[in-house]
Image (cartoon, rainbow, N blue to C red; front, top):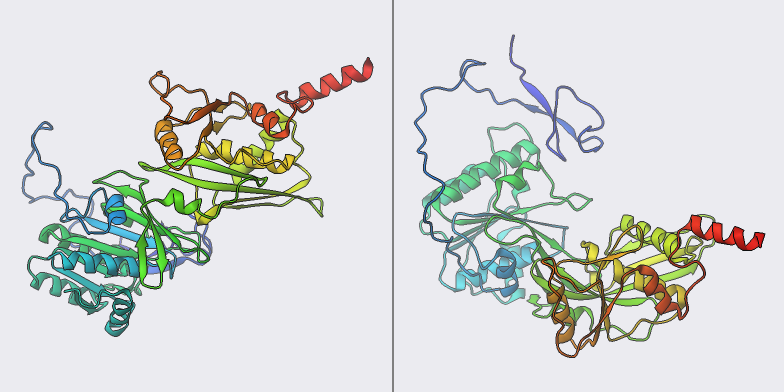
Length: 481
């Protein structure tokens, strides 16, 4: 039976199907399946490969030095990488268009080149003069940086093979690079996978660090096959809102360092500047004694970050109340609203709920439940929370408040910024020992969400802490009496 000469590949997720379809069954994307030619490989089918060399086997136990690192010189960037670039490592950087990917990489490349390393910046999206104009605006035009504009993989590979002692190579972006042996267009799954594999092979064999810039889809995920994320050593996302000056470099994968680490930058007229104390920056415009506001003591990677959570309740004009969320999970907000109404007696079903994490920051950890609940309860009672208090803790479906990780780091950050109180779960760490409070910081232990609602409302609501069925039973008994 003859081998098939074509296959159908989804350009969003990389799934392969035997025939064309309008919708991809793997990712649900419409009109993303494209026909691609199958690369013919010589050799009999169904037989194991023979003639290879024997692979050396070594014991698991051994002595090896930690991977050497080359600091870039930008502290926030080095923090996310775990201390700097590792030779022969491959980094994938993604982000929305115009968020600042090329800006931060040009600054990093210029800083590294200024320290004596040989750096090559290859742009496939911009001409050389455009890159020079950006460098002039950023004030790095005098950096000893080698620049090129190319998209053909053969030309790029030949150039890299002919250079010696390369420290860093930046490819901006991988979706623009194409290989002439493939019939598909640049940016397709086959082209991205083949070009990335060849560039990664060169980086591993020649020993230079490689940074690939990747486009993202409208959902915010990296475009192209997910196998690309598995091929590289580190995956970073550059996040931020267009209306805010803050940019967050977030690590989601790092074979040489911690994941979920963040670096905070501020976009200025002269490029991206580091933010050494993001907590103070996120709270700089906070106004105390305003209802619907609470300060959340969070942790991103190893860094504690304090942000303001804002909530607003408004009467619903229609029969279907609106739930608008910025910077938090909308599904978790729905769960928390249900707990507040069912377990704590708050009536929120007829109100439009608007929740916002100030500063364009996105919170992903469940420890923000208590801060969000405090903001909602404060908005419902129209009474402000304590301006000198921070909140953190996970809320369960029964209304109980559970302990979260790295509580001591959160408390130390709160005390450093001048907060004098913290609302938190029972002060017991993961190993059973009591948490040590920083000097001058008082703790309020919240065992159940009803305690928080009672404190913010000034009195205990009727039926608070009971389930909806229990409240109905009590009401029926009072009516019968």
